[in-house]
Image (cartoon, rainbow, N blue to C red; front, side, top):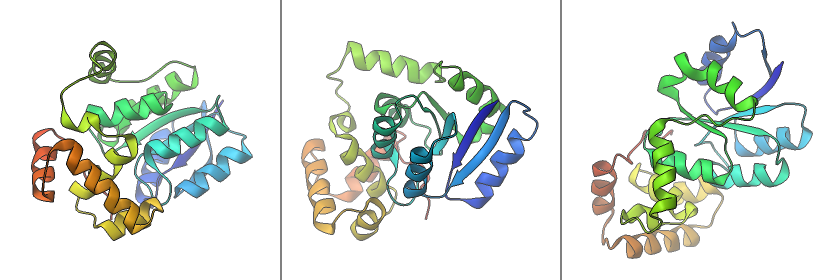
Length: 214
């Protein structure tokens, strides 16, 4: 039996995932979490084998949360389920310690198989993500501007181009407004840009503008 915890802040999404998993006799949902703090609480309590984790939740989230989980529970399997389709999100999640990455659009047909594969200790990633990971190893100095950003900078960049204000980002990531402003300045310097509209245009051109939750 594969015991899993579902972490997603949307009730409708959690209920939908439970319906998808209803027919899987070898999968048992033993807990749910709606933010990063609840995720860490479950991780510290233990008693499950796999965490099905949304990449964008209130509180601590994203790559930062994956790294924290990995440091506290090195053997826990992590399968990312997200709205983000661009491979760069997956690459950063895998490098942070996730074993699998699945978009919510494909969950209906691939979720059960992905859970079984990750729970057995094997990675679950698309061919495109596998190629991107290989390219990162072979050509670490890739010229794409967003690849120069740190994980935290990329997270702030993603929220900025997704329409979030600096104050909203600060509240979401539990950072000060000044810290987020500093990140924004560094992002623009690294990417050679002078305005948010330039960043949005770049995000659209490189398929980085994924749906963000309100």
